Image 1 (spheres, one colour):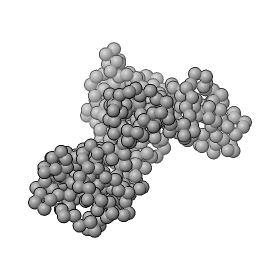
Image 2: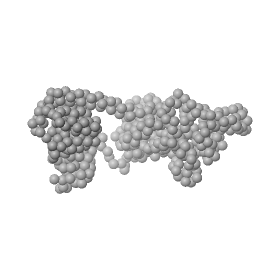
Image 3: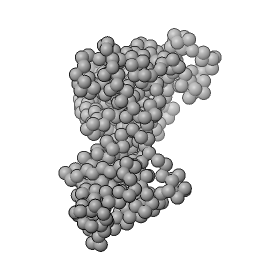
Image 4: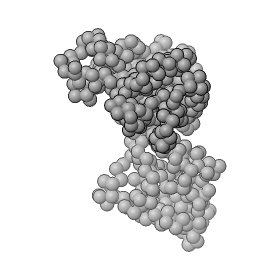
Length: 453
C-alpha cells in the first residue's frame, strides 16, 4: 500500500514546507475544498492534514469543517489531522467531534507533525489489517457455504446475526438454492449446536403419515402401531427442527403445528399427555406463502409464527459472478471423488456457465459438473460437455487488458451521465484530470459531445 498524504493548505510556503517534512510519503496538495475532494478521489490518501481556514473565507473555520465532513463521508477510514490557530481551540474541538483524528496548532513544527503523521499511518495500517481479516471471514462465513457475490454475502451475514437468537426463521428461495445448507448453518452457529439437527421434508411424506412423523404416536394408536414412537419434534428436543417445504403442510397439521409453536408442548397421536419440548424451528419453502394465504392454502397466523425472521435466498442467476466459482468448487470435488486427473473448464464453458440462467440452481449446476467430469475424456470440459449452448451468449473477455478497457470506458460514460454531460465534473467524480478524461475518451473512441468546459 503506497503511503500517501493529502495536504490541504492555501499557504504556498507552508505547503512547500510540509511537502519536505513528509519524506516517506507521496505528498499531494490542495488549496480549497473542491481541490481536496478531487485529490481524495484520485489518490485515496490514508492521511489528510487539513487547515480549517480555507478560501473563500480563510478567516472562518466553516469551509474547513465542511471539507472535513465531506472527506469523512467519502473516506471514513482516513485519518484527518486538522491544523488550527493558537486561539481557535473551540473549532479544533468541533473538528474532533465531527470525526477528525487529531488537531495540531500553528505555528507548525514540521518535525513534530511528521512524527504524528507516522503514528496516524501506523494506526491506519493496523485498522486496515483488521478490516481485511474481517472481509476474509465474511467471504467464507460458514463451513460448506460458498458465497462470493454481494447477494449471498448479505444472506450469510443475516444468518450469522440470527443464529444466536431463538427466533423462528423462514428461508425463502427456489428449489436447489441451498436452503437446507443454510438451515444447518443456523443450527451450527447457534447455542443449540451440540443438540440434534432434525430435518423433515413436508412434501416427501404422505399426509396420512406426516402427523405421526412429526408428533410421534402411542402404542396401539392405529393398526401397526406396535410400540411407542417419538416424533421428529420430540427427537429434536434441545436442538433444531428443520421443516423443509413447509408450504406443503396440510391445513389440519398447520393448526397442530401452530399450537405447538404457541405453547411449546406436543401430544403424540393416540395419546393425551402433553409433553413439553424445547426446540428451535427453522422452516423453508419455494412457494409464495402470501399467495397461498390468499387462496386459503396456508394459515396466516402460522406464517407469522414460523417467519419471525424471513430470509430470501437468491437464485444463481441473481448472484453476480458466483456460478463459475461454484462450478470450479464442484469440479474440484468431483475430480477427487471420480479419481480423475487434471481437468479444467474451457473458455466457452466458463462463458456458458456465467451466462446460463440455471433454473435448477445449485443442484442443477452440481449435477451437470458431475456428469461432465464422468464423461469427459480430454483435459478440458467444454460448454458442449456441460450440455450448454453459447450460440446466443454475448462474448465476455477473459483477457485482463480487455476487461480493464471495458470497465474504464463504462466508468467514463457513467460519470459523464451522472454529471449531466459536464466533463469537468465527470473527471472530478472519477478522481482524474480533465485532460486525462479527454485522452481516455479518445482512446476508447467515446462520443462525449462538446459539453463540459
